[in-house]
Image (tube, rainbow, N blue to C red; front, top):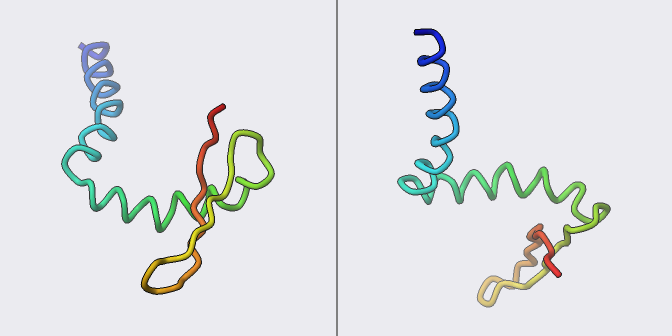
Length: 72
């Protein structure tokens, strides 16, 4: 009984990000901008496989810096 409950709990924990992305895309995008990008930006310039994409907004003229994973 305990094993079945723990398997169901593990399954639910693993499926949560998939369901969030599927049903709450705007929330995930806002979370990405507010939290993930700020954390990743701190070490993206120093770690291999990461980089910073810099571009200027077309209408606002604001400089945007977005951390990205590099694939060769």
